[in-house]
Length: 137
Image 1 (tube, rainbow, N blue to C red):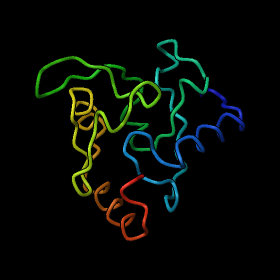
Image 2: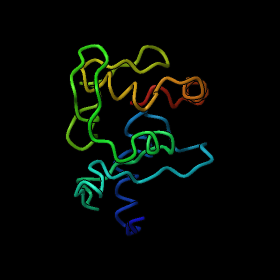
Image 3: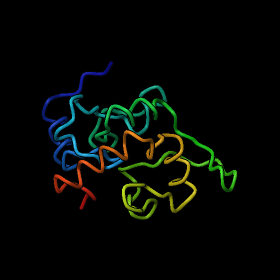
Image 4: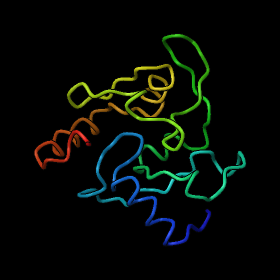
């Protein structure tokens, strides 16, 4: 595992507003500490720099793993995993209540691969709404 300096970790957390940059849940109130994710995995040459790091909840981080490409089940296209550093979340995803809907092949494939609408995520987002933390702004 790569050691990430505390100052870089703090920058990533602050930039993400303490939220997973894939599914949008807040780290506040979660038991597990979120991961600092290498958007381009180290195994693929990704560097430990601010430009290649994203805050990810444990579930999104583990489901993404070292994958870089996914298949969009609607079009069959092979696409890159959503990149919080190079893409805008709202261009690829939208909220339908507590569900995340993929708007593009990248969005759809990422929603499916990271299982962003599994039951526990919907429950967490329901609780976050009660706490004034959903939807993310």
